[in-house]
Image (cartoon, rainbow, N blue to C red):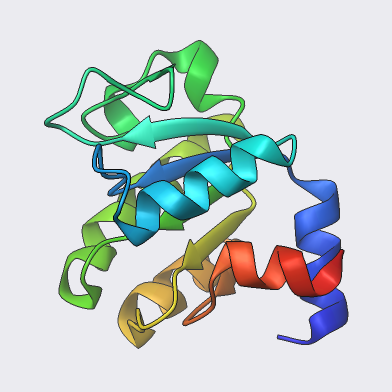
Length: 141
């Protein structure tokens, strides 16, 4: 994925479901989500153990959200171990099939799952792996 492609993704898509968003403000997922929210992205937390994070309602999973929320997701940003990514991608594919969105599955820095990436691509999703949205946003803008 080129820098130009990443910049285009970050410029075009502004609604991000953050899967694995921590309630703890010293965790990378919290720091990245707070940064994105401060830079005009809409954050939708996905954490089965939280009701609210960063002032936003949190959901147990992508498929647990109301349809009206599912229809707005453009990027699924994954902060889960690589071994846990495939089921998340399957949910993203389900939403893509039902609503035409999301457009992107973004696996954060250190997260690589080729099987999940291939499944996402087969479903027409753009895949970014092993890159931090906050770092890439900072570099691009």
